[in-house]
Image 1 (cartoon, helix red, strand yellow):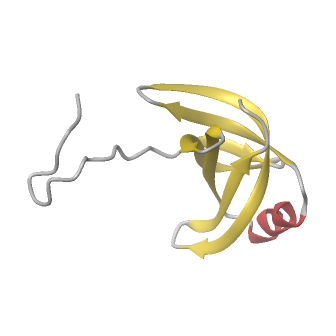
Image 2: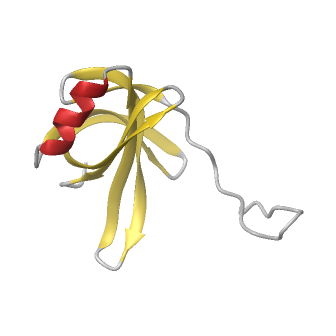
Length: 105
């Protein structure tokens, strides 16, 4: 069943909850989620940590390990897989790293 927003008649999107996670050995909070592309299903994600330097080091590497929650439709599971950090920014709750999975978890 699809939920429709009564204000603008667009499909409502569920908001994912931050869960305990680890990126390149740094503890923090984050998650991964599926994205449909012309290549099929791919996974992107977000990770938040207090340690700015550790996340910046991850951005400089081609491949780092992410362990955390993957949301897939109505299910969630914890997996470990390799990702590429594509962007890091300062956020109100710490440093944020955006990543793309290099393999299907």
